[in-house]
Image (cartoon, rainbow, N blue to C red; front, side, top):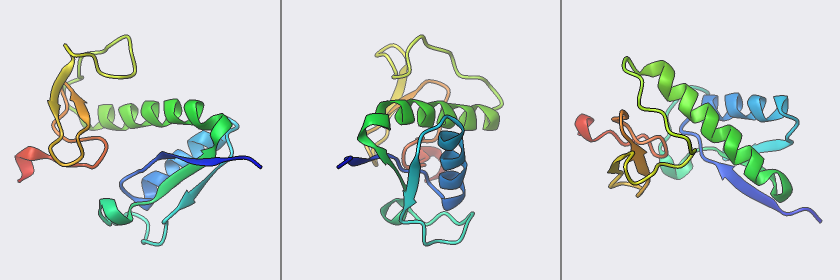
Length: 122
């Protein structure tokens, strides 16, 4: 039996469906869980949708999700953040750590990509 694992928690149902389509384009079978909210409504972290894939596809799916997340943020920024050679932030490239979820946020971003926390909006 194939183990199914969580690979991504998008903020909205609309994002979940966009990521699902991207994964399917790459030949990765995936499904969305917790997708009961109307599309386009931010329902908060506790009830956000979840993307699931087979464990064998998880690393590739996570990479695709990170790429999608970066492209999503880059299109909404007026100034491009510095590029790094790695997918994960290095110590020199971390601007701040999200106090809400503990995610390291790269320089150039003012909103946490993981939970959408924005310290300047508080």
